[in-house]
Image 1 (cartoon, one colour):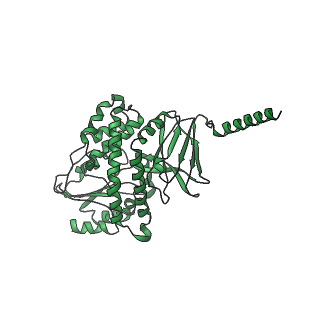
Image 2: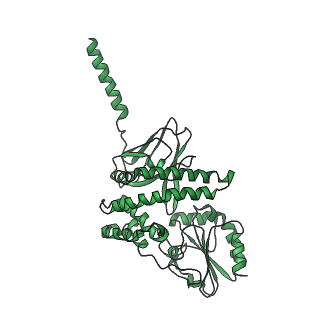
Image 3: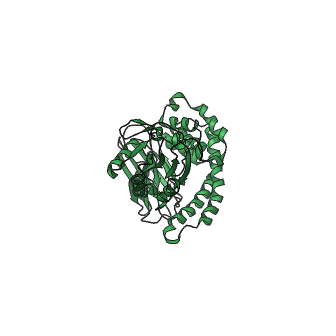
Length: 391
C-alpha cells in the first residue's frame, strides 16, 4: 500500500512538474513573451520596441521582479514580425535583441547577466530559429564585445555627472571594434549558404548599408556578391529595395562641388526639387524627431529662417516615416519647406550628401556650389554658421 501510494505521489508530482514547464497556449491573434533571468536586479526595466522609419518606438515596458518579466498583446496578420528587446539600465550594453513574433506563438527568453543581446530565445517561430543560428556564430567574441560595449554605455550614462571621458571610450572601441568585425565577417560568410529568409534579408540590409557608412570594415566585394542570391520577389520587398539602393549609391559630393538634386516630397505629396531655390542660399537640414539635438535645434532654425528669408531657403529633410513625419509637423506646427525623401535608408540625397549622423547640414551657394557640410548641434551654432557663411 505504501509503495502504491509512493508511486501515485511521484506520478502526481510528475504531472504537476509537466504542467508547470509546458508551453503556455497562446490564442490566435496574440503573442506572449516571458522572460526568466538570473543576476538581474529587481526594478530593472525591460522595453519592447518597434522600428518606425529610423526611430525606435517603445510599445511596452515591464519591470523585472524576482527575475521575471512578460509581454502579452495582440498581433495583426499571420506573418512573422520583428520587435526589439532593450534595457537602458546601468550595466546593459545599450543594444537590442531581435525578437520574432507570430500569431498564437509563445516566446521564452532566458538570460544570466546584463548582456541582453546574448539572451537565449526559445520559440517555434521559424525566423527566430534562423536568427538564433546567426547568434551562435563567434559566441565568445560576441560576449567579450558586449562586455566592452556595456562599459562604454555606462560611460555615456554617467555623462551628466562626470562628463565624457573620450580616452576611455576610444580605448574600449579599439578593443571591441575588431571583435565586431570578426562577427560581421562570420555572418557574411554564413550568408553565402544560409537560406534566404526574412532574417537573411534583415542581415543583408545592415551589411549593404556598410557600403555607405562603414568603409573601414572592407569586404565590399563579398557584400555585393550576396545580391545574386536574392530572387526577384526578394528584391521587390521593402528590405530588398533598400538593399538595392545601397548597392547603387549616388556619387557623393564634397565642399566645392556642384550640388546634387533629387526627388523630394512635401506634405501634400508633391514632388519638389532643390533647384527651385537656385539663386538663393540653400540650407539643407537632415533630421529626425527621434534625434534629441535635431528637435533642440528647431527654435534656432526657425529664427535663422526668418532672419535670412530674403537670402536663404531652408529645406528640412526628415528621415522619418511618412505618417510619423506628418504627425510631428502638425503637432509642432512647423512651417517652411518640410520635405522628405520617403525612402528607407540613406540611399538618395542623404547618401549623396554623406549623411551618417544627424542633424546633418549642407549649405549651398546661390550658384549651386556646396559651401559647407557639417553635423551636430549646440545652442547658437546655427547662428554662428550663418554669420560666417552669409553675412
